[in-house]
Length: 453
Image (tube, rainbow, N blue to C red; front, side, top):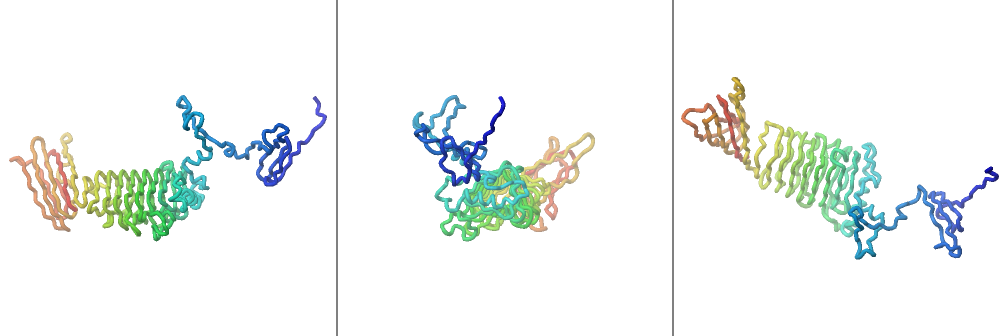
């Protein structure tokens, strides 16, 4: 069929705020919002309601049209009853359902590309979700803040208000990287860092972080600053800083004693020390963590901490894994890759117990290996006992080596029993506290150190 006429369909158009009542089937275009509408017509024309109807386009707010949501649970084979009966189900808006999900910092503008400065976006997310004016009256606004995989560059430290919960996609995947200074610092519910708890604010505490790495690239500030806080938990987190950082984690007590702090399965890399206490703290648990790159110590108990438990940690080449254990602080099950440090057994306060060891001097063919004199350990300043047993075939020697080592003066006594014929073995210490064993035949030495340092 030949085209005999072309007609142009003309729409009413203008700004959205000036949109008029459209006639029946008349169309209107909002230029500024890019929305398309059509007139309903009048009731006399059998329209269900007078007004205008939006025609959906790519610029329409689809969520605003979904006014209700009802859980059905049909995967279980039936429709769940959510209300008092099947005819009165509980319905909720889809927007409410989506807002209940974990909140991403990207919803507040963070990019996570390692280049863009995300400081303002992350701070905005924290302050909006943990709003100072609602912290105590509107608990439902406080929810987990998610850091999806990426590197989030920040140029100033981020606040840790009470009840803050953050999580990432794994400590190797989600990283908050500070160009200088700290990554996080604790504050009260009014975001105050001095005069904590004043003006009706809640004190710092109840902070949980998991599956994320906090990294500072320069400066001497701690990666994490905890002050006068209680119930702080870090799970499967990385804490990394340069060599100049005195403590990767600094725990202080300017206003009150910090209480109930826990670091579980974390990795602490770099710094002079890993965890330090310039202030008082009680109830600190460090468990299953790996320390590496610290030039002096992993944990510095100092005189200010009580109730610290160092459990099943791994210290890689750290000169002093745990420094200054006294009082009711405990260390057990931790090991070190530095063979020059005797770190086995259990420290209960300053008492060292149960450092059981076995050294085997074997015969390989006609070549005797490991014989002669071997260094067992270096006795620290203090006093203690070493129970030991040396066996060569059916012969044996066992005894208790008592010592008192103070400075370069060593006093010791070896009470032992052995068969009439000597087994050719001897345990001795020199004035520097170096404990050695000399054997002349294939032997096995077992010993247990009970040491007070």
